[in-house]
Length: 474
Image (tube, rainbow, N blue to C red; front, side):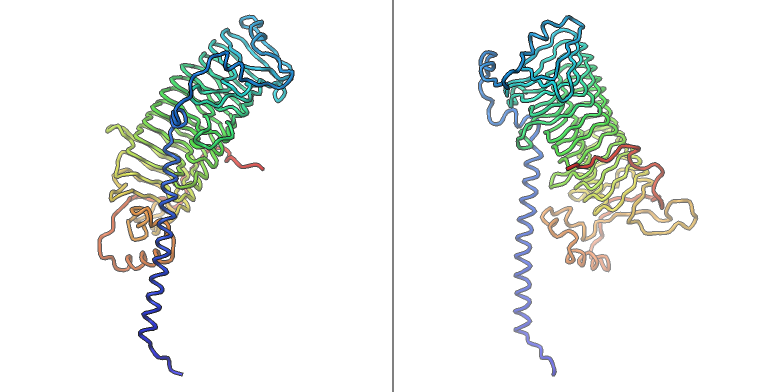
């Protein structure tokens, strides 16, 4: 039987398809816009948001705070025991519950039974305030601080120098260790959490303010807001494991610090450098920084940073660059990093220059390099990187391609310039438009980057050297 062509039926079908596509577009744009705005709203709540919004309540006197504290029955007062300890002596605490607060204004050591010696804050204020130099705290469980941000209610408020704080547990405390003009301390092998609050309202695991030459190492940090270093130099942050927090490590106006061998899992941002210069980011593993604001390593107006031997794995954006390096004569060096399976490997906020990417491995990323707006990343230096989507030959067998790796702005890059179009990323319709444009482009595409000598094989020693990926344990 012969088929008959019906113009009316064809027109109805076409109109139905257009209407369906319009509904999908509206829903998609709405979903992307909501996710984008919510992500930006969450991430832009800086460390001062919870401190000043809503307005801080009226201050309380020491007598008022003492009246509000509630301790378990049989708790032993801690301060008389501290007062009875001679200068330079050791206070050994049994496996009991002790009531805070405690103030340490002389050099001494306090030893507890790990898991058994509990210092309870009674839910008000900070637990321990250390104003002396050369203090050691070890084997203590510090729990139940207050929850007021304007007084930075903490497990330990540290104002002394050259102290050692190791093998302690911080439980249900708003802030963990709060350092202010406290130099040369060691914070090692502690288990640190915050309170069960929305992420932006939690406290920081470790807050370092105008404090230099401290070592923060081998700590387990979970469900806090940030680990943040402000206006500080010469600090070494190494071997820490940071999980389910907002900023894993956040440097603000802090220079000449070293971040090495840390492992990050499921934080909104792994590491962020903001107005921070001359820092080293080496041998870290950052993975699953997801969501609309997800970033593995972020830069904001930061210069002279060495980013070497790191793993950026399965983040929304592996590396995010905003006006960095900010120093016109500065640089940022990215060398021998493994940047794999991210939504975007390297995202530039604008057309910028001064960064060098060499001997890195780009593997399985949905997008290699993006630039918001109409700019290019080709004013930066790209050389000798491994790109798993490079296509070409090595006829002289020198290990580098005969033709450069080039990344162009074809139609499949539409989602970079039009955020709402991200809903259609990897969709068959957008892939088809891209295919047609490559067959016969009506306009010249924009060159994003060119690596003149792409590697055929992975660079030797690429990625983090020995740093274990943090795993989630049920």
